[in-house]
Image 1 (cartoon, rainbow, N blue to C red):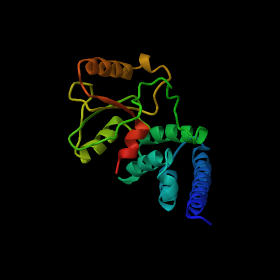
Image 2: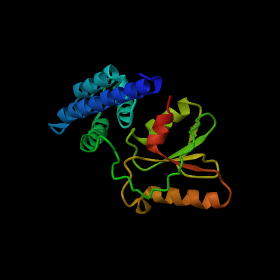
Image 3: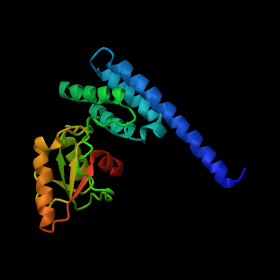
Length: 205
């Protein structure tokens, strides 16, 4: 078999394994949320599954879910707010595992193509609900990687990150004002990138 054909066959098998793995993960998630609550043991069960299936856990949206789970169990406890947020993420994952779009508006002004995300020395602003977790959790990741975070868009801003759980009518939400501020600052020469949460998560080491 020619090398190119062999490589294509290998990639096809790999994609098939990942597809099957994602389907299995969806089944696990649906089992967890069946009773309407997420316990510490269930969160730990999901963490074990993602650790045992790294090939699947590296793909969107499983990678986002995997990171969120690791953050939650890192301190050995899951408080009520974390359980509520995790339940919302798992509900959406179970309903739409291939897209994990959370009603993300198709007309969100995400830069296309989305630029490379650099953390060191850059300033980030997070807008809208993040599937990864509360804004403070996202900000902590940025700071640990040498970046800085602010709550409002200014000329210092390098990236505005739009949360995956954005409302359909984004212009009427609080983060719509942030997007408008970026537009005004760009008109005055500021180089501010607007990126999706998915793109931001993919850039995390």
